[in-house]
Image (cartoon, one colour):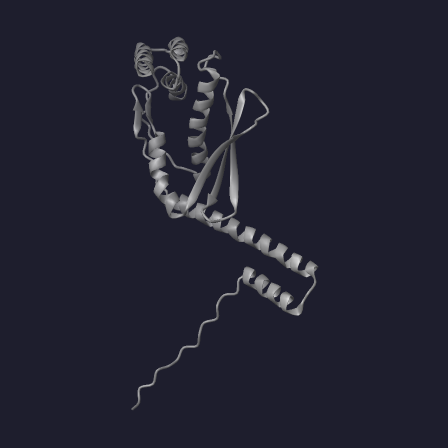
Length: 241
């Protein structure tokens, strides 16, 4: 008995909307259609390309969000509790974003107010013409929790950009931060304490360190907080010398 080999019929390839438009364009060229026909088909191609790129972006973003794990709070402020540092956030997202060729591009725009900064982030997939813009308005008045000035304008702007970039990443990727119930209630809440400490540590001049320290000292509620601010101010001045 002879061995016979069955030949499988080739599977039809999926015809995409873009392929249909390209076929129509080739047909129009072959028929010598007028320029208005070409323009109409080229416009449809451009719209379809934008649609495909937008769908690819949305799909990539969904895959990233699905792959991301809960970010563990890696840093602790004594007496305040734990929080996820910028380093922890970047470490958690960089590999997953690279796999999807997901790009963040940060810039600023005029907010219309000298006291506000508009931070923008253009996100895209490498090689795609489509990008999505996210914005976050940020105050740059340098005011502390009691209304007084804590930072110079330059320091306030730099601090706003640094924090804003982290917050925008959280928003864009819908990051999940570890929930803990071990925060200590004594003294200043962490959302007040942290900016005061950052103002001291981020000051770029001796005078800026002194100003930030004085405001932090006035806001402090415990002797431990006062000592923390004093140590931070001394360390910052030593670094600036």
